[in-house]
Structure formats: structure tokens, C-alpha cells
Length: 538
Image (tube, rainbow, N blue to C red; front, top):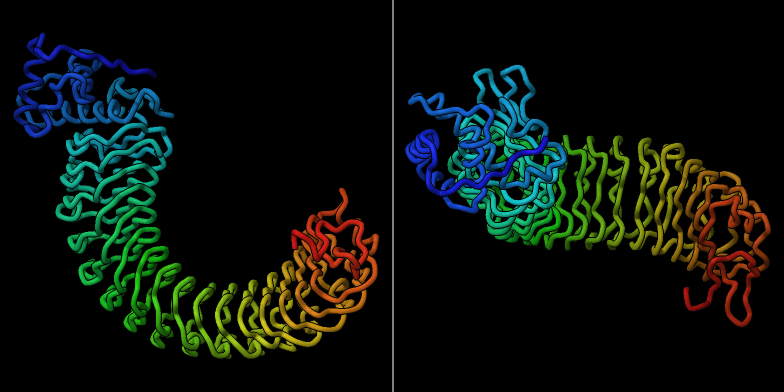
């Protein structure tokens, strides 16, 4: 239902208006002046309180009545400040009892306790437009303030939010808030358990006073414009912190060794910042850590061997840094790992055989490093492995025995390595393979018939940039799921069969077919190829 938006005159017109005004000046002196400033949203809210509020409450000299009236005033201010008339759901707002205690429904998004105090304010994707008003701080009993996914709700987070000392949960995320995180939050909200301000445009530093939030368990600040150091020394004072999410900001400096002094930490996200320096060995003290992401920073040096102590870690991603040296054999003790991503660094040496002991590993990403030698045979025994991504290294060989991964591996990327000789026969044992990249190696000989016979689930097959010879096997037409087939820059001869071409018509899904069917003297004849090489698109 709609709500009135009166604009009373600045001079009191009734005895009740005078009494209301006097009460506000006495009880909330810092906030009262705005109520009498013509044109302000507070003035609108006071006008509603005086003229249109259906309850028409009047101060009677008791704190309980003062609190009740001020609660309705604060909520009305929120309504007008955040564009209440355009909310997706504004059921019952400014009509009847806000808590629904008089037989009617309460106002949408509110939760109350047994004595009619608002304890929760929650709006998710409700088209709030404008800003949060400082009058929210009047709602002293609120424990949960959750206003999220309202992209047109901007402005700074009011300093006064820091006086809502009963707050357990403060979640103002995926809005458009700007400015700094109010220091009053750190100073006063000592009961706060959950603080989520992610996906806004907040600036400034994460102040060392954050360490005063001794009850905090989750601190989530993803995707803002925060900068400066992360004060691990002070954050370590938060004894029960479980979740530290700082991804997607401009934090800088080294990762201080005190980060290891938070034994309760389970989730640590520092990716997409500007951190430098080396990984502290005390990371190994985080024995309860389940997920650690440091992608896309400027960290260098070796992975400390103490990382092997993180036996509960399920997700490890250090992609896009300048880490170097060999991958420590101690990773083999991290038995809980499901995903390991060390791609786009400068790791060298051979893959440690101990990786093959990670029985729960499903995803292994090591592309764009300097890893050399053959892939350890033990990797062929990893019964849960789904993705093996080793492109752009110096790998020279593939395991001869892959029976352990034959039913689980769906994606194999070995592009841009130094694998020579024929296509490894063991590849054909990977019967559930959907993606196979063997391009840009030194492979010779023919495509074995078992590729078309055994790999019926293939969606992408890239063999370009090798020295493969012979005819393109007709039985590739059996790969009915194939969407991309790259065979160019080889030494194939003959025609692409009509059976393969049928995969490109309306009955098939093959949309990318590349062969050496271009140039003045093409070695391959193809009537259905999407790209003929050499040519401008190769």
C-alpha cells in the first residue's frame, strides 16, 4: 500500500506536535534538528508521525512510550530516505503496528521481540534507493541489520550505526555504499559476530581497531576499493575468527607472520589485491584452514614446507603470483585437498610424486609454470581426479598406466609442452574424457583409431601444432558430442570424411573444425571446415 509524504510547516501547529518535538530534543538531541529542517527526509518522517501515523502516539513521560514513538520515527525516516514508495515489497509500511501486535500484519522486513522492539531489519533485493539514514541508530534493540542487493542504495555508512551496540549481524553488501568503514563500528560493536560489507565502493584502510571486535567470526569485505596493509597483528586478537574475506581490493604490503596466530581461521581469501613479499612459514599453523586463496597478487619466493601441516585444507589457490622453486613434497600430506591451483607462477623442477597420494584431489591446475620431466605414474592412480591442467610447461611424458583415473578424468590439458613421439596409448583408456588438449607439442605418427573408438564423450579435441601424419581417421565421426576439433599445423593428408562433416550440419554440434585445408597447395581437402590454415584466421 502507498504511504503519505506530508510536508508540515516548520512551526508547530498542535499541542501534540510540540510535545513530540520537545521529547525528541530531550531524548535524541543529536538527531532531533534534522526533523525540523524543511525538505529533509527526517522532516517528512516527523510530518508523518504528527499528521498521518494511524497510531497517533503521544509522549506520556515514560521511557517506554518515548522509545516506541522514536522507533516509528526512525523507521519512517528509513522509508523516506531509501525511496520507500518504489520498494519492491513495502507491505504494511506506515500502516498499523510495525510489529503486527494489534491483530494486523507487521511491516515487511522487520522482526520484533515480545515487547515490540524491532530486533531485525532485513531487505534483500527490494529496490531501496537513496541512503541509509543515521536515525537507524535509534533502533537500539536491533541485533540483525541486513540490507543487501540494492544497487541504487548508496552514500556512506552512517557513523551512528556504530551506536547500535546490540548488533550481532551487520550485512550491508552488494549495494553502492562509499566512503570509509566507520571507526565507530570497530569501537562499539563488541557483540558483532558477522560483518559483511562486500561489493560496494568503500575506500580507505582496514583500521587496526578491527582487532577490537572480539566476538567476530566472519569479516567479509570482498570487492571494494580498500587499501593499505592488513593488520594481522591486530586481527589475530579476534580469537574466534573463522572467515576472513578481503578479495578484490587494493590491500598491499606483505602477509605478516601473525596471520598464523588465528587458529580458529577456516576460510582465508586474499586474492586480487597487491600483496607482496614471501609466504610466511607460520601459515602452517592454520591447521583448521579449509580454503585459502591468494590468486593474482605479487607474492614471490618458495612455498614454505610448513604448508604440509594444513591437513584440513580442501581448496588451495596461489595462481597468478611470482612464486618459484620446486613444489614441496610436503603437499602430499594435505589429504583433504580437493582443488590445488598453482598456475601462472615460476615453479620449476619435476612434479613431486607425492601429489599422487592426494586421494581426494579432483582439480589440479599447474599451467604456465616451468615444470619439467614426465608426469609421475602415481597421478594415474588418483581415483577422484577430474581435471588435470598442465599446459605451458616443459612436460615430456604421460603415465603409461592410468587405470586409476580412467573413469573420473574428464579434462586433460597438456598443450604447449615438450611431449614427443606418438600420442600416448594410455590416453585412450580415459573413457569419460570430455576435453583433450595435446596441441603445441612434438607429437608424431598417426591419430590412433582408439581415439574415435573409445573417447565417445569428447567435446573438445585439440591436436594442432604437432607433427602428426597420415589420414584423419574416419572414425572420429563417432564423437557425436564434439563441438571443437583442431587439427591444423600438422602433416595430415587426404580428405576430411563426409561422416566427420555431418557433425557440422544441423544434426551435429561441431562448430569449430580446423585443418590444413588453406594456402596454395592444401594438404587436406575439407568441404565443411570452419577455418582452413594457413590463412588469416589461423
